[in-house]
Length: 173
Image 1 (tube, rainbow, N blue to C red):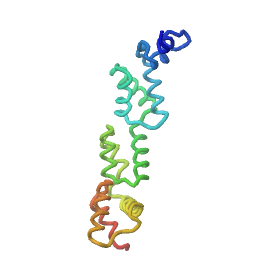
Image 2 (cartoon, rainbow, N blue to C red):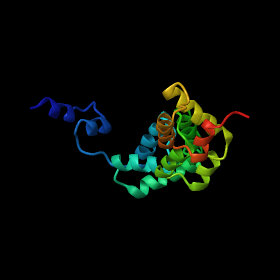
Image 3 (cartoon, helix red, strand yellow):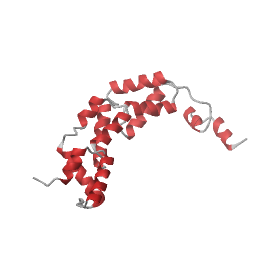
Image 4 (spheres, rainbow, N blue to C red):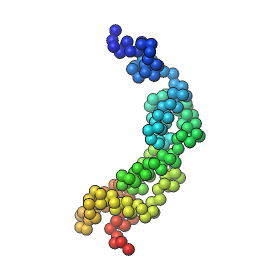
């Protein structure tokens, strides 16, 4: 008898512990799906799509997963609004621009109306954030054409609009 087999048949292990050690799969229950979803949400906010994808990898009952996620949303335990607000805050802190953040939010299934609520790309703060990101990376705003082009490409990669990038090189009023 192998060590693994003795663990599976040991009466003091719960079904979940037996499942994690390779035992027979436990029955999918609403409580198990809700518990897994709550564990994910306790770590950080998740979009509805992210939560569905993660739970689908663990459980095969698609309808049950959808029902549990809807119940969590109804109870305000899952919110794409809160997720977007948190996501934008973290990404801004990393020096990313509105285009990149919006793209990532859309990839995570966040509705366009929610994305636009948290990302006002006309906001003057984005130009300041672009300047800060450039200074953090290069320590100075470039004057020469080649170095300026390099910094502009960097800011474009970070997701800033061309107008926000141009404002980095404008003289202060």
